[in-house]
Structure formats: C-alpha cells, structure tokens
Image (cartoon, rainbow, N blue to C red; front, side):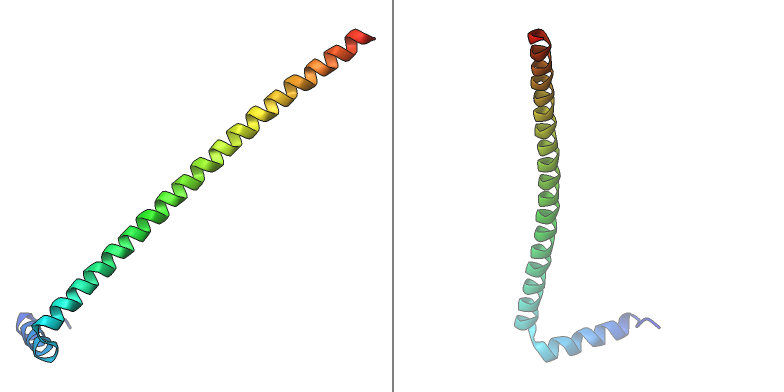
Length: 85
C-alpha cells in the first residue's frame, strides 16, 4: 500500500531533521552529478560503438579495393603470359 500525501510529508520532515538542509542539498548535488556522469558515459559508449562500426566499414572498403587491384594485376599478368607463348 502506497503512503498518502500526509505520510510523505511526515517522512520528508523526519529526513530533513535527521540530515539537515545543507547536507540534503549536498546529497542532491552529488546525486545530480552522478546522473550526469552516467548519461555522459552512456553517450560516449554509443559514440565509440558508432566510431568502431565506421572503422570496420572503412577497413572492409579498403580491403575490397585492394582485392580489386590484385585481381586487375593478376589478370594483366595472365594476359602477358599468354602473349609470350
């Protein structure tokens, strides 16, 4: 059963008396900074994941271009060998 508004007010007053206003402000600030840090690290992780994906695509493209050049060189070599016979 959820506490009603009156019970919540009593709980908040007890917390305020136990910790004091200044300490609650510090706890709130620390909690806010922790949430900011978490969001920033999540965003950085997504950016790194995207960068890694782009690097893989770029590497595949470079490898594909290299394979195409190797095929052209191999075809020219075969043609040159035919001409010699």
